Amino acid sequence: MRDQVLTWLDDNVPTARMQHILRVEQMSMELARHYHLNVEQAAQAGLMHDLAKYFKPERLLRMAKEAGIDIDPICAATPHLLHADVSAIVAKEQFAIQEDAVLNAIALHTLGNPGMSEMSCVVFLADSLEPGRGDTPELENLRKIAHIDLHKAVWLTCDYCVKHLLNTRRLIHPRMILTRNWAVQRFSQKPELTQ
Image (tube, rainbow, N blue to C red; front, side):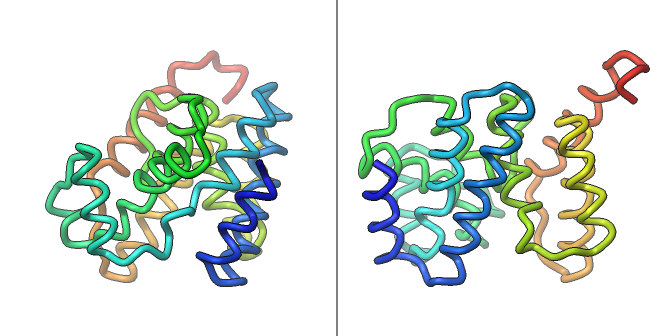
């Protein structure tokens, strides 16, 4: 299965993106192992998270519409945000992935979602924090937190992403804010010892 996916990716994504995908696969596995989650599912979700990354906007919009995915005004204005949902569709149709844990982790890796599973948190974090994203003190700190508390890491990674979007004057999808708020609440409900 992995070889099939790699062959497909070779034909559909540039080499630089392929390197990112492999690093996300590795970090997803590492975090899954750390949190005692299904490592094989984490690897699959990490490997397939960007299947639709280079689909043209028209194709993303068409596939999302055909699948009944809600296309809100932000996604209509920036169809690239749909690549996560569409990548899950490709994983299901092209590679017969059936496990909800894998499909949801792929679909939620960009914007997250309130109530998302630990597996989805892992792939969300791996996509944002894999080593190729840089080695700033802020990113290094987020990587450390990712190994201490998933929800705190999701919250602070959302903050990091929102700051970047603000600084680059780009649209911010409300789901990123909802994910952030959910992660803050999850973290604040934990016993004091973990904080």
